[in-house]
Length: 56
Image 1 (cartoon, rainbow, N blue to C red):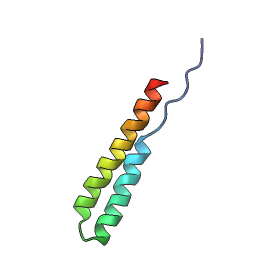
Image 2 (cartoon, rainbow, N blue to C red; image 1 turned 45 degrees about the horizontal axis):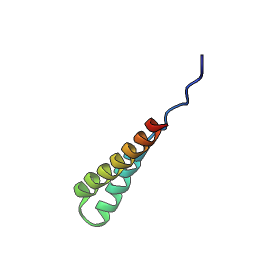
Image 3 (cartoon, rainbow, N blue to C red; image 1 turned 90 degrees about the vertical axis):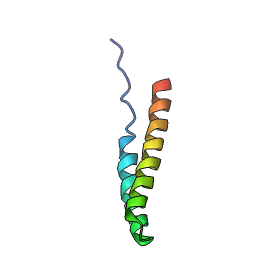
């Protein structure tokens, strides 16, 4: 039975995006907006990683 490659983990990008978005948002006095933008960017990058991993 051939071994399958482990899938790439893109979820960490969502977490990092959330934290960085919150930090940047607090510095700009817009923490909620920073979190929302951070989650959106992290999720988009996670989807890109998922699609690239799926294509292999």
